[in-house]
Image 1 (cartoon, one colour):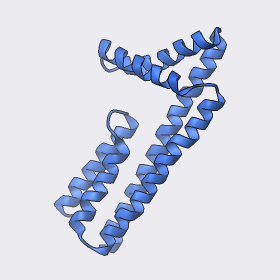
Image 2 (cartoon, rainbow, N blue to C red):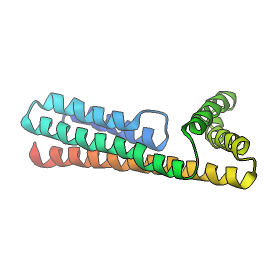
Image 3 (cartoon, rainbow, N blue to C red):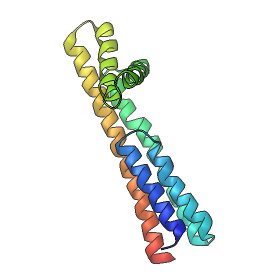
Image 4 (cartoon, one colour):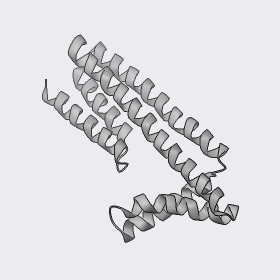
Length: 160
């Protein structure tokens, strides 16, 4: 395994961690690892792998926004509610490092939904639906990243 392949693998690992712990643009780091390897490979295999993982990554990004978005709209959660959740998460993350953002996001969604719907049960259902959609988003991104890594590993072991 070359030094570039090791650096690429580390970038992919950082990307996968960034997906599970949403701090970094994880899917981008995974794709960047393949890009680095493909450019250094300078072969038809490298470019074919880069093309394949770019298509897989683009499909994953589209699915990330289509599937969870439909579920949130069906549950009555608007985009403005999600934006409010992110703003509250950022504020809580600054006020209480590490756990503030994790607590702030659902708190922000619940607060907006409580004001909109005027009752606890409806606001709570919307908050749970939004959290499930976010979880589904993370699963789609993780699955996409793992398929990209699998394509890269296959190319690394069989075609080079």
